[in-house]
Length: 178
Image (cartoon, rainbow, N blue to C red; front, side, top):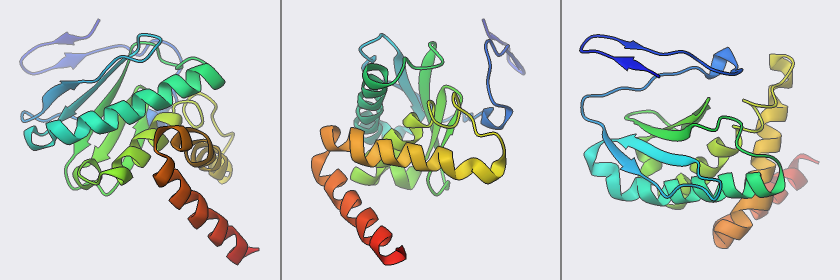
């Protein structure tokens, strides 16, 4: 169990975790937002600025949908304690960390884009954090598998219009590059 005092926080990492995935986000202004747990009981929460409480709820639902889809179609969530999202003001996108996701404030306020980022970063817990690349030149495998599952498998069931637009964009780009 973590030990928190006025000036320190002590914890231990249990299980395996890629070192590049270790991160901390803290702010005296954060408020906690509880999402609905996944079908397997995984707690899905966020720590955000007060102005983002309403919008983050939508993205927590998208992340829960991704956890449930991945659990049903691939494997259980690799870190069974929780999936916590943190708002990072000024951060331009999203990033997955072991049992956590960072989302920039603009992403949280971005409607469908925020759903896409929340799903994409959640899927990275399987492709990137659990199944890891052998070396950085293979990093594209993590992004490739994650984005394919996000755009061609999860989003069509979660947000069909968003998925259709992204699929068209990807097919157009692929045809241009062929």
